[in-house]
Image (cartoon, rainbow, N blue to C red):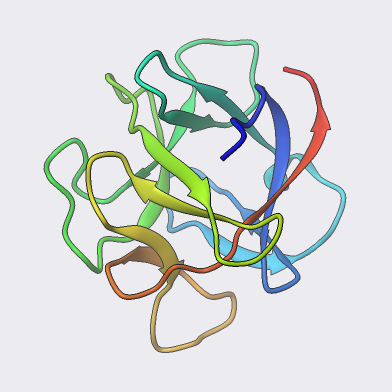
Length: 142
């Protein structure tokens, strides 16, 4: 897989964008222009990635899961949390389709997928049986 260069991205699945709000589950919403659908993605020395809210202020708000930094469980909700140290690291690997990726908690086989039952907007959770094809649309440099 080609490494994702650091930058600001829209992360999409099934023609909807990952959408963030602090301290609530991360959801998928129809595409719109707005900072709630922008994520800063940058690599770590270990070859993983940290996904944050774009902000010049540090510490930032990180993409994480309920219960972090403890070992994740299947079904844990994906959310944004302020100032998690160390931040949750994600393994982003080439997906099944061209230009698609899987996003897994580093060191596990748990990937980000849509939680059942399908509600609107759908919540995201960690799953061991689903490898959806996420796309990363680079908007601009960090």
